[in-house]
Length: 153
Image 1 (tube, rainbow, N blue to C red):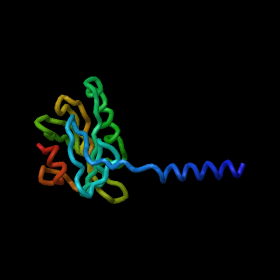
Image 2 (image 1 turned 180 degrees about the horizontal axis):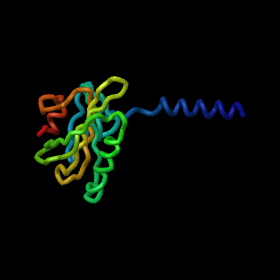
Image 3 (image 1 turned 135 degrees about the vertical axis):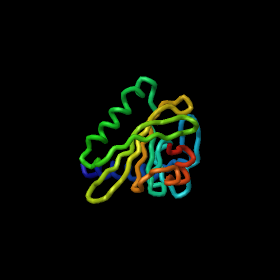
Image 4 (image 1 turned 90 degrees about the horizontal axis):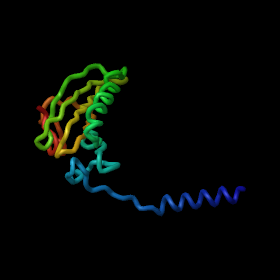
């Protein structure tokens, strides 16, 4: 039994080290390819993590889902104990208007912000979820990458 467990452990270890990590160099946003900025981390073609203090992800929806999913998503944030303020917000993305809310959240004395907007960009329904520790009021508050894809209205 010990030999079987040891063999399985060795095999799993070799397989995990033997696999090469696929580096993602571009993001897929509303039928467009956008280069991943330097010094930004990503797990998929649909999100950036820790990019100048901002994390962003987008979920593709269909027209039917666009009618219900954003409200469900917003409700989850509205009902969290850490949510202290909710403000309507509009952004423009490649000529399309997205609407939603900016949430101000407090957790253990730390303030963070979440912008959740939805709509269609290039005829692709989507929900955009942006998290930051910086209060975003205008387009000037966005990092260079975000300025490429959204503008605060």
